[in-house]
Every structure is written in C-alpha cells, then in structure tokens.
Amino acid sequence: MERYDLIFRLYADFDAEGLRDVQDFLDVFPPVDSRTALDYWQDASDELEERKDEIREAFAAGDEFAEMAARASRDQAFTALDLHSKYDRGVNALVLDVDETLRSAGRTDNEIPRQTLHLLTQFHEAGVPIVICTGQTLENVKGFMIQGLGNELVHSGDFSIVYEAGTGVFTPGHGSQTKKLLYDGLDSEVREVFDEVRSRVLPQAPDDLRESVHLQGNEFNVTLKPNFDIGSDRAEAVIDRGLVYLVDLLGRAVYNAADVPDVAAEDADPEGWARAYYAEADPEITTVLDAEDAAPECVPEDVPDPIRSLFERIDVAYYHADAAEIGSLELNKTEGVKAALDVLDVSDPFVLVMGDSKSDLRVMRWAEEESAGIAAAPEHASEDVLDHVRSTDELVYDRGDAASMLRIAYVLNVLDEL
Image (cartoon, rainbow, N blue to C red):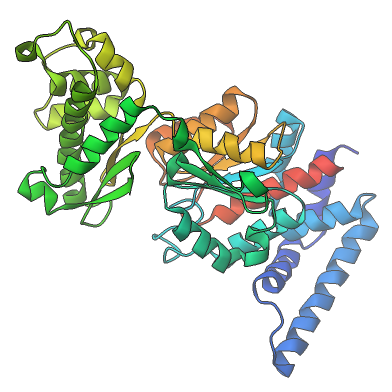
C-alpha cells in the first residue's frame, strides 16, 4: 500500500488527535512530587501506550506510524510526505533564528514555548544537531538556551550557536574548534570603516534621532533600533530617518578609508555615492530615500571603483519599523552556519532553516541554491522572506507556533526511516 494511503488510513481509523493530546500533556508536564499528580501522570502514560499499541498492531511499520500520529496532525503529516516525495531525504540539522521565530512577543510573552523546547529535545535525542543562528550576543543566547534546553544538551557536542549575526560560532565540546571568531579574517580597511561608523553613529546623530533610537550589535554590525514599539508609526518614522543617516555615515566612512586618487576632494560625493549604490541594491531602501527626500542625485555608475569595492563588502539592511543596520558581508549568518555545520561534521547538509529577517533569507537562499535544505518562516516575517518561502515549499506558520514546523520536520525524518 502506498504511503499516502497508509497515512490516510492512520488518521481516518484512529483518534490521532486524542493521542497527540495525551502525548503533549506528558511532554510538557512531566511527573512531579505529588501522589495525586503522579497517579494522574501514570494514568495518562498508560493511556498513551494503549493508544500507540493499537496503531503498532495495525501497521507493519507500527512504531513509526504511532510516533507520527503522536507528534503531528493529519495536515502536518501530509506536508511531510510531500516534502519527502520532493526531496527524498530527511533533515540532518536544524538552523533556527530565535526572536520572532522560535519565540514571539506577539503570542508567547517572548519566551520559547515549552512544546517547542520539547520538540527540540526530541530532535537532539534522535541525533539531529541544532544550530541557533541569531544576532544576539553569545552570553545572552547561551544563557536562555541552557535555561530552556538544559546544560547537558547545550554542551552535548551536537549544539552550536552562531552569534552576533555571524561574528562568531560557539560549539561546546569540540576542543580548539569550540569557539571560532570569524572576524579574524577581516582586513584593516573594513575594520577601519566599522570603527569610524560605530564611534560616530550616536555622538554625531541629530538630537531628535539620538533621543529616539538605541544602538545594538558589535564592532562589525551596527544596528539602530527604535525607542518605541516595533511596528508602530513612531518606530517607522525614526527608523526611516535613521536609515538615511546610517547610509550617509557609511558613505563618509568608506570614503575616508578608501584611496580615491582620481577624484578631487571638492568633487567627492560620498553620501550620494552610498545612497545611489544601496538604493540600487535594495528597492526598500529606494522607497525610504524617496520618502525622506534623500534620493541620490548621482547614479550607481558614478561611484568610483575603490568606493564600490568596499560597498560590495558591506551590507545595509532595512527592517520596516524595526531596525536599520550595516554589517560585513563577510560576517553573516550563512558563513556562520557553514562554519557551525563544519564543526558539527554535517558533511552533506539538508537543514531546516527557520527565520523571519533578511539575514535569515541569505541562509535560506544558500540552502536552496546548494540543495542543502528547506525554509520556513512565521506569517509576520519580512515580505522578502515570505516571498522566498512561499515560492519554495510554502512552509509559513502562525506567529508563536514554531512547533508546527518542527512537527513537520520530525515526521519527515520518520518517513525517511521507513
């Protein structure tokens, strides 16, 4: 019998939803030191085994189908089947953004839900490495991941953190490779640009802008964040002004760092060159510059080669009503993920990438271009991310419901074992 028919029979003939409810209860609420609670937990455990035994006896691959019914809904199981039919393999690593991906202030009070944490534990127990890929600092990420997943899992040797958007990679249990500082490869010219931008970005900002934003990132990632609720009209206004300021500041810093012998000082237009170059690179930046009456007066072809060569190594990113940032294109999540997978010895990766921002989109595109994985995003992700995800496998999930994608990936791996 075809797998489609077997899965159809599984969800038609058995109470998979009831089985999943019992499984979720046992996963999220382990036994506690109370006689009444222990009795209740034991009753649920017995019920779970009875329900699974019914499925085990009905299918040749009974264990796998019982696990499938306990972990995923009918729609999730068929989505996993479609993915396996398309790619003919399961995922051998998870690559996961945190903020607004695993956790969301909109639905989960900015905590990673228990069910999501438990599913990550299940993947770990199945031998699937986990790569957390975030713009946050190592200390911050390491702290809440130990709190959520436990010290043993984080230090197991199958867990890695790509932090500060690719500045470094932390993979405990791998000796000299435990901590890799990817910025060691940057040359002095790029370092000079970021040093100047960071030293000037707040002190030289106009008063109204300086009072409305705060700084995030590190020496190779400079991010302006609003002092207002993300997504609000006030946040949109200040980030749009901040983007123009940041582009101009970058243009001046690149001009100071580069050698442009063929351009006289009085003819130099570093701010205009930066606006022209980055407007051409990103339509969203073009829209903001136009709206802020800051459209470039020159064209991209006017940018001198030494200036362009530095621009090509530096990224400007705009996140609507959320952030404006510059970062090194040589220090990004994609490079961090590849370094992490190398340390984890995932030689032929096929990963599940989950994220919401343009920095995650680069990882998603790498996975697609290299046939190295699939991508999923929350419904409130940036439009570019959603466009990519919808054009590939349509793995879009509700805000705060990362667990649904993990369930699909879990069943995908179960199917791959059959």
